Structure formats: structure tokens, C-alpha cells
Amino acid sequence: MSQLNVTTLNQQFAIPGQLEFTEDVSGLVLACIANKQAKSTISLQGAHVMSFEPVGEKPVIWLSPAAKLAPGKSIRGGVPICWPWFGAHATDSTFPSHGFARTVPWQVVASEALPDGSTRITFELPQSSIPSAQWPHACRVRNVVTIGKEMTVELITENTGQTMFEIGEALHTYFAISDVDQIRITGLEGCAYLDKVGDWQRKTQSGAITIAAEVDRLYVDTDSDCLIDDSGQKRSIRIAKRGSRSTVVWNPWVEKAAKMGDFGSDTGYRGMVCVESVNAAENVIKVAAGATHSLHVTYSIE
Ligand code: BG6
Image (cartoon, rainbow, N blue to C red):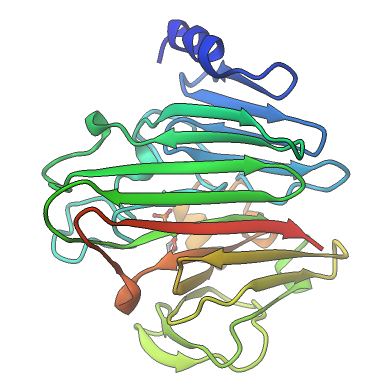
């Protein structure tokens, strides 16, 4: 994207003292929010939240120190948007994992300073970013991000065509934690999950989740809040969701992180955990012609 675009974006959507647009050395355009409650950076590629830091708090969101910002590449960390499918495509393995939305340009369509002091920015997936061979359906997709004491992210899918379509999706959020040894995740006790590390076997969660090896689990039929209780940072992160019936918990652990090559140091995986608000497997969403589906997640510290 060119400087001209950044100038135009600033003319149309900047909010003095709250929101401005800049261009990264990689050429990616970033929306930079800093208000009295928090700061955040969001890449227009993927409408991808890269950071969220409430005033007086350590970062809530993990971004790999080795994350590569480049056109067409997904960013390791932050809040990648997986859409319109989650994981591998159901029938065509040549289509990108987790869908195309995270690696294509989105447009800014609105910005707003809210009366409570938070800042809202709305992104839309332009038609030109939708590969029709992969997604031959008429739709309008928006990502509405609100940055204040809490962060909310709302992914809205509207079916503007004449026939029903089905989507899988996720807000694939990476959280910054003190160390994997120091956290437990609650909210999924008693839930059924598909264990990707165990050949997709169906299992039942007993008790809180602790992490001491690779964890890659798709919990189904759950709309519960999750809490990441981080004794090392003496805080908990609450993930409260609506319009999501699956939750993925993921930490690649040492070998997989090393293979991925963008986790930073060889202990980089220890400072993150993904707790993803998802609709996948038996929880994919049918969106009828003319209907709208919203996946809405609030992230807060307690
Ligand atoms: C998680 C999946 O959602 O995303 C994992 O459950 C996957 O299996 C991880 O490894 C990261 O995916 P990607 O495509 O960003 O490397």
C-alpha cells in the first residue's frame, strides 16, 4: 500500500489523540490506537489485532518477536481471523489452512470515539480480496474492534446472496502469559473435545487445563467464558464470547514451535497460549440467504 493510502486513511478516519494510520517498513498499513484506557495496533492486512495493552497492564496479547510482517503472509501472534473455514479446508487441501481472510487486505469503513472513552474501528473484507474459486458466495464481512479497558472483537458475516452457505471461523487469539508452567485455563471442565495431538480422538475435559506438552484441542458445544489464570503475572484474562460454540486451546510446545520457525527463541512458546473462540467441526454455522451471523468476544483483565 502506498503513502497516498495512509494519507487518505488519516484524512477519512484518524481521530486526533486516539487513532492514526502508519505504514510499516514491510509496506503493511497499521491502525494505531492510543486512548486514555489502552493502546493497540491493528494491521489492515487480515484486520489483524497485533497488540492490546490496557493502561497499567502488561500486554494481554502475544506477538512473536519473530513475527514476519509481509504482504500475503499470516502474522504469528495477535488475533488472526480464520474465515470462512477453520483448519484444513473440508474438500480441497490446496486451499490455505484457516481460510484466506487473515492474509488479504481489508478496508477501514468507519472509526468512532465512543462516549466511554474507548475507540472503535470497523474493517470490511472487500470483494477484491475474496478469491471466488475458494468462496463463490455473495457476502459482506466486517470486523469491528473496540479498544478500551476491555477489547471486543466482533466478526460479522452477512449472507447477501440467494442461497445458504456454511462457514467455519475463529478469532485465533494468542495471549501473553508469564510462563506455561504458571497458568491454568478454566471454563471447559466436562466439555467434549477432539484431540488433534491424539489423532482427533474424542475425549472429555476433566478439571482445569494445564500445559506441560503440546496441546491442540477443539472443544465442541461450548459457549462458556474461559479464564486464563496466570499466577506468575497475578492476573486472570477473561474471554467472554457470543455466537461461538467451539473453543480451541493450543500451545505447540518445543518441537512444533521450532519447526514453525517464527516463535522467536527456542523457549518462545512458553510465553503464549491460544484460547480461540471458534465455530468448527459439528459447530460450523449455516448462514441463510439474507441472514447475519456475529461472533463477538470480549477480552478483559481481572
Ligand atoms: C490452531 C490449530 O488453531 O492453529 C493448530 O489447532 C495450528 O493445529 C495452529 O497449528 C496454528 O496454525 P497456523 O496455520 O497459524 O500455523
